[in-house]
Amino acid sequence: METNRLLTEMLSHADPQQVAGLSRFFKTGPGQYGEGDRFLGIKVPVTRAIVKECWKETGFDELEECIRSEYHEVRLAALLTLVQIFTHAKKDTALQSRCVDFYLSHTEWINNWDLVDLSCYEILGRWLLDKDRSLLYDLARDGRTIWERRIGIVSTIQFIRHGELDDTYAISEILIDRQPVHDLLQKAVGWLLRETGKHDTDRLRSWLVTHARQMPRTMLRYAIEKFPEEERQSFLTS
Image 1: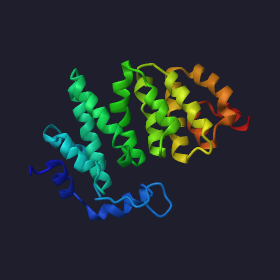
Image 2 (image 1 turned 180 degrees about the vertical axis):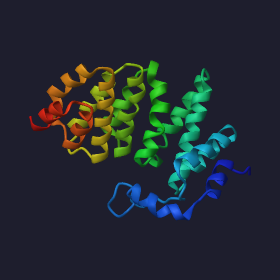
Image 3 (image 1 turned 135 degrees about the horizontal axis):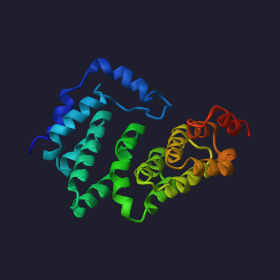
Image 4 (image 1 turned 120 degrees about the vertical axis):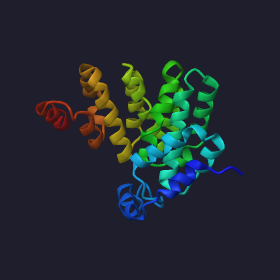
């Protein structure tokens, strides 16, 4: 059996001195959102450097082994490698489709906010730029976990970057209606709404006039972060 270089390199860069800090940062304590997750102590820039060196020789069998790892950073390495494979596939739609299928069939292991945020828009967002986007609505509405629902909204950042804002607003409404809204979903929705405002502030302002009263506080604060102070206070006190 061939050696899984990506896995071997990640394991060889473990830094036990960093484990406690990363475990606290990603909330792995009892009852917290990352409960039970394990860390090697590898910072993201190191993981990215390893992926840059290894992605070309990493196949789907190796990705399968890595995405199921007990270690957070190895799962991240698998996802960043999948992003590289997808991105470099360019016009190889069959390979890109395989990447998308792999991603969607392994969401059980995409189980923290960084794993979602560093991968979903690069794969699902790009893939869906010229396709039907109902799967993101399904994830937001029916996702089994907060992470699947977060994938639904964060993937739309790719559309925002192309000046397409409709899906972000529509999926935000789905998540607002699903009360109570988990804090990590509040932050994601607020962040994405704030991003829409960079393209069309008047549209965001108009949308908020209709929806602000339904929005949980954290979500609203994130969405209006770039507004003038007087306007922010108006939304917060209305």
